[in-house]
Image (spheres, rainbow over the protein chains, first blue to last red):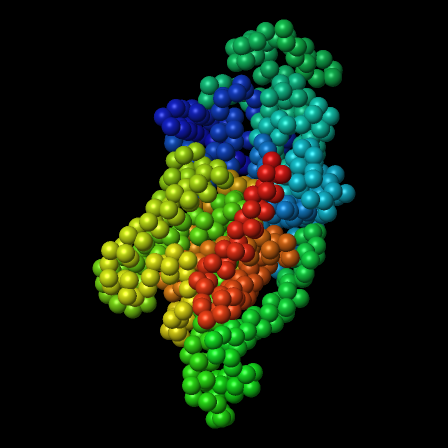
Length: 250
Length: 349
């Protein structure tokens, strides 16, 4: 039992964005959520995180409807990294990561050794310790994403949901970030644009098309030429070799 | 606890909280002392000390009864209200800036003060019961109405930082016009308090019962805001980020918006609409103690009190024989700060 969606739908302004999606997170590993723009990836992530209330169906955390769970309790086990986080508050990188401790701390309570350790470990695992004292506003796009992931890790979540975290990064930082995800030790759901990255770094792929979840499974099973043609409206050839699944577009 | 937080949160504020509280309290006492001593009739420190000893500790030291009256009933109550009002407005500024993610948010610029004025004036003119509490209730209704008006206008027009301020201008103008109209067309209100009071604020005529209202309100608000300090921190990256950090966004927003409306209403019903305190103080304090709200709220409340008490002293000293509305003094400091923030936010884009 982890995080699952059963027949979840979400309508915004009369338009159905997510339609009748049933999805269960694998016990471990990285689940890649792929699909064209507007296919409902981000909305599905928000529904899974309990940030939006579905107009139908339900999201369950360990079998309990997410709408029945207090926000603070959700935040103690499920963390979210947005596509691009912005703030006008003059925070240091470490202060941003420390925000991740908020759900673990009661009001008035002191900053504990455990908080300190969680922040340090999160900075360590994302390789951002050397940037801890730096101001958020002076970090590069890749560093900001890593700090946001570190903030999410400081929440000590069991599930980490990321919405196209590589969108604003150059290729090197994209690969750095994708390599980081399987090593984090949490279940990860990541919305992605790049099918090759999804194939290379995700243990499982879920494909969204026009608000529906149309396929879920191992990359080699799911990502075939006919599905890619149908969903993304491009001609592709897929080769499965010892180095993994490669997709070429024409 | 606080020292621990400081060491945990890398960035080093100019002052530690302990040092700040010490300096802040000293500054507060100094400002109140200034408030008591300066004015049309000068009183000596000796007379002040004797009066306080008589009134607070039950002594029977010799003081001229008229001077004792001035010190106790007029000056000290006035300084106490100034401190409470300044603290209230500064807290409002911190909360609004965090929740709206807008560096220019404060009750006066958002038109909440103007709405509170209209509400208070309406209650007075319609004589809906008498007394400070009913006027405050009217002010609260007005403040809440102005809040709703500005929120609907701002988000209806697409949201965003600039829209909120524009909506605030529209709200201010509308409610100030309504206040002026009501006051001018009604002899009753004219007799009680003039247009200038409701538009710019004044500490004239303030007495102990006003402090008796302002003090508990600001104390409760301060405690509640400190309780919500972490939630306010969590709003740094927006409402979805706050929600994913475990904040019940809708509830916290409603509670804190209601709280700012209540604080503003209390202040406005006692001293009128005084602007810019909620803008100047939080920004200055962010510079001194850093962005973490636990420290920021406490520091802003202290500094807001000091600022308002000193502004009041200045308002009595600048023109010999005349008292400026205290809002004129705060605006003289606040408007340039507004300009600086605007300038810096341009650089950030």
